[in-house]
Image 1 (spheres, rainbow, N blue to C red):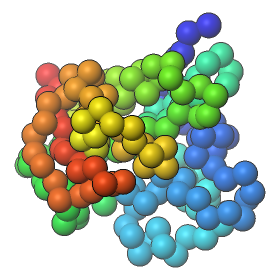
Image 2 (image 1 turned 90 degrees about the vertical axis):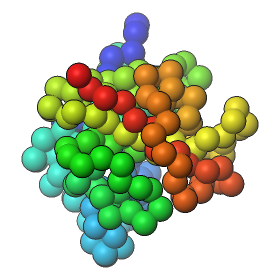
Image 3 (image 1 turned 180 degrees about the vertical axis):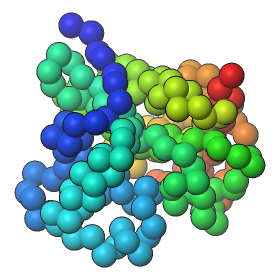
Image 4 (image 1 turned 30 degrees about the vertical axis):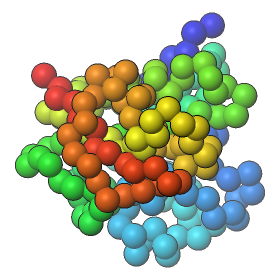
Length: 189
């Protein structure tokens, strides 16, 4: 069966990829760039999942990859103005307007190496386009083909974004796992 990617609307499916094994654990839930840092720091344990559920009530907060009924991956996508990137001191704002951001791509263990990250990024682009975004950007590492630590691989690689039709728009002063991050861009006609 092939991989299907669709907007993230079901809390249990989002939790399967982003949630903790223990309900009281403090995991990211992909909130650190989505909400203001002060609010992010104040949310502990179950409150983090409750915030994700609250956000889902307003509509999709990303896209999910499915292999049959199994949720196998996630990509965050939203208007840049609604994220921490709008206030970033390390990642420049190269556009005036309603650009969207794709910033977190996760594939569950046991499903990696099957092209799922490519499908997730492609559908994040399509989701942004369907919402009227004039362009989309991402902030992957420029790893020059070197292996990226799995803990930090969520930002994606420059090669992944290039294969999805993005081009480098700017350097950033952000570094993850020793690799510089670059601002990648794609116009959405």
